[in-house]
Image (cartoon, rainbow, N blue to C red; front, side, top):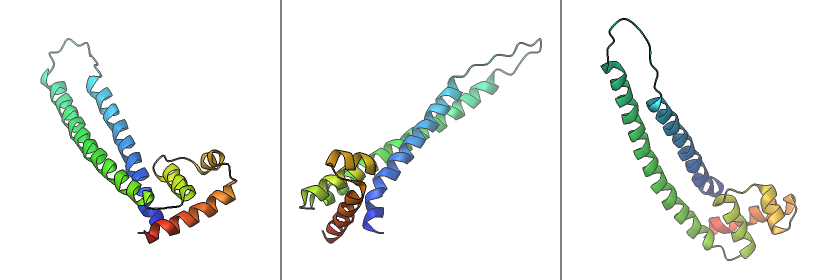
Length: 134
């Protein structure tokens, strides 16, 4: 795994958590959706209950998985922060924090740091070399 891939892990885990949260919201909507059918025929009242229970169980399992992922994300971010903090060059350290912990775009980083994109890319390359040595 390259240094860049290592640093990107937190972003991908964060995106995965967001996707799972969307799934929970979708399951929640499904579980709370109430539809009624008017009919002269007696219906099976337990049919919808079991489906709702299954949906709630799936939702709870997904929420537990999300909580585990959040714990992993916090640990990973702490680990990445420690690696970034080992870089002595302030400019490189700030760039790494903005990119890999705050998930800022290259354009926003360049604007905040007062550089053009080409300079930001050069600083990034230098920062990756410094972090891989630490």
